[in-house]
Length: 447
Image 1 (cartoon, one colour):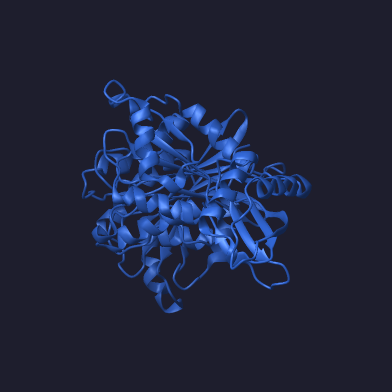
Image 2 (image 1 turned 120 degrees about the vertical axis):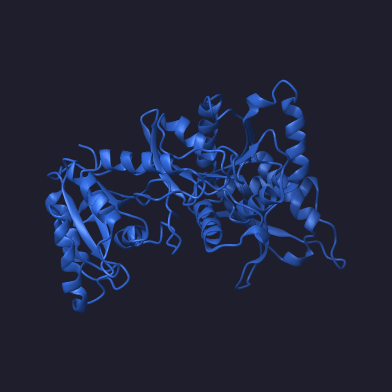
């Protein structure tokens, strides 16, 4: 039995995204006073009294999108309504009934599904009588809530569970095997990639830059395993971030990178690498995330540009990511996407790999004997032993006598040999030089 789905619907600016974040217990959807912020369906799995429910936020019904995407936003709303088992019809107590509320109510009357009417912004009991006017919309059971004041949440959850299909005792959604974040600047094809991946128009795709504003989680299956793809907003130069919407989109994209097990950094094959791309790659590096540099829309340039030219271009632009694999795909048709996802799985496994202490020490001894570190103030730096202390990323500690005596170029040499000889050569590695007997780590190195 599928996980029950609950869709949050209503006119613009009644607090649908606030309700979504409130019920999810996390700030997932962007909340802004500007109407029409939410475009795509934003979903989250929540647990209510031991039952799992998929909660979906939608765009405002009746909004005229500023980028002429009204039809696409409406298609996403319709898809959410069609797939839902329960609809939460959100209205605004402080604004009262508007003609657009009447329009939404009329539309929901034609849907053969249970509906709860949520009178949001009913911050205290003094406003209850004002909220009662929404009974005039008819049909729906009215619950007076306030996402801002955390009012009547338990009552709402109780009514939701009562209206959902009977619980399946074996209903425990499978945890995704891997979380993949798709990042890149605007219009590199992230949403197209998602839609091709799941063979569905899950994300709005257009030539309008910045179409995707929220980070959207999309579950999919491959080879009988469950995965989570995270579509992120396209980023723009920091100096071009002029609105709260741009700021929050950037924050969501960075949080998605932190959440991911593997990051797919997308580039447009027909466009030069930008400053935004460089900032994103630097952030991925700082977070020690396994990554694939993905050149998308390859079908547009394959006849004019050899793959070796783009490989050289990427390697020269991002010398600190020399170990990161590169893939060439066409998101529109799905060409090479399956191979890309298989490689992403391989990177995830690498990030979880461990090497035995004895094998690691044997390798380090061989390296030191072959190429000893230079003298430092007439003393030879020594490594007493090495050990791996963590994964995601693989983290190695070298216990030594003088951490400061290992020059940066020698550290890079050590890291290069480790990356070349160990089973996690394509993912970030943390290496600490730690003075034996000291209380703190010294010299965090990521090369």
